[in-house]
Every structure is written in structure tokens, then in C-alpha cells.
Length: 316
Image (cartoon, rainbow, N blue to C red; front, top):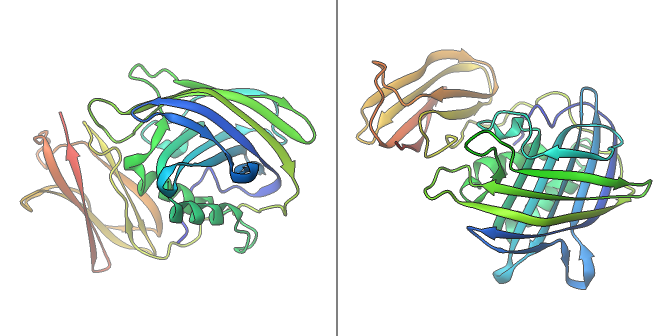
């Protein structure tokens, strides 16, 4: 399955690839130490500097193995960079809409306790060049944000809209680059008390490697199946975004029900929608414009005789 993510897919003009080490300490809801060096001093940190027709980006990440054959993942995507990348400081998360994580200027993610199967799939995604020499980051981000969001920590602004971290690439040569970072990352799933971690003493050192240039596709591929994503945020107050993907042009209906099955709100009523990924916002109000009560609600996607249903929770 391929889902189009605009900021990743720009026509590729050139790419530089790196391998190296990322290290930091973290504390908060979960605590520990992260290093991308595993047994026999093998580095499993990776980085790409990608040039595109409209913009360039720099992505870096790493795994570290914990107990019980589980892994932690750190990933940072820096948008609107130069190619080749130059020394620069990025605020975390920088510009963008916090309700749409993929729009953030600096996307910084930490996910603890991943199972080894997912890690192997992710490594395969990052190194796969079989699909026309393309870097398949679309399915990667769909998995991270919409399948693992219960265990994902993300760099977001604080309650006052302030940035909560900094990442700096400080030294660059023909063969290497290095820098440091710190950040407060928060679970985008609404909880009380808030679940967050503080990353301290973050360091990264990468060495350039020779790899085939990976082209990044400039056009969306047609999705292969009907998908209804988890509402984001969830729980929510007052608004939540419902994303969905349809494989071909057809009429779509999206409705909200209470837990007893009574219709609360029709968000989309039998509208013709083009193939691709779309979104609609529910503001927690019923058909009469009144705010509904706290609790669990169901939302449904109807398309071509098929129906998918998921749950979401309104809190006050």
C-alpha cells in the first residue's frame, strides 16, 4: 500500500546517505539511555540528505536494543533544508500545524518498546530500492503516526505555543557531519497527567557512505484499498480530524454515532470524492449545533457499498 505524503514526495535531484551514531539520555514517563551502537560496535544509525525540485530535507534516525528483544526508535525529519545540508539550528517543532504532524518543520519522534518484527520491516522500508529506486517513506509514516500513536512521543509546542527543543547540525565536512539536540516530546494521545519525556545530551555523528541515488516520487500512487485512520487527536476536545483513503473515485459518507448507535452528526453526505487521502474535522457538535456530552463515539466511512467504523472519545 502506498499513501501520498506531500512533504516527502518531491522530484529527487540528488541524495547523500550517511551511517553513524545517535546517543542521548531520556527521562519522564519512561526513562533510559539511547545509543545506536549495538553488539560488536555496529552502528545502526542512518541519515539521508535529499534534494527535491521544490524543497530539500534531512532525515536521520536510529534504533537501540533493550531487554526482551525490544527496540527503541528515534527519528527526526527536518524540512526546508538545503542540499548539500549546511550547518543550521532547527527549533522543535518549528513552523507547522500541531494538529497535522506531517506539516511540522521539524518532526522529532521517539517510540520505545517496538517489537523486532516491526523494526525489521522498518529497516527494509528504509533500504528498499526495488520500487523504481524510490525511498518508501510513505508507508513508514503512516505506520508511525496512525498505527503506533498510543506509544509514540512527538515534538510539539507547549500550551503557550512555544517550541520545546532545538536540533543543531554544527560541523560538516566532505565525509561527515555532527551536531547535538535536546527536546521535550509528548504523547499526542490526550492523557492526564500528560505523558512526556525529556531528551538531554543528544549527540549525533554520521559518516557519508556510497549508495545508489534513491529517487523520490513526485506523484501520488493510487491507493490499493479503503482505509479509515484513527481520529487525531483521540481523546479530543473540542476538535478531532478523521482521515480516510479511497482507492477510486466514488461517493463517500462519513457519520458520527453515539455508543448506542444513534446518529449524532453527518460530516459528509454521499459526496463524490477523488481517489486518495482526505480528511474531515468534527467539532464535537450534533446536527443542531449543540456540543455533545463527554464519552465514546463511533465514526463510520461508507464507500462503494463498504463500511468501516472506529471509536473516538470526547473529553471535557
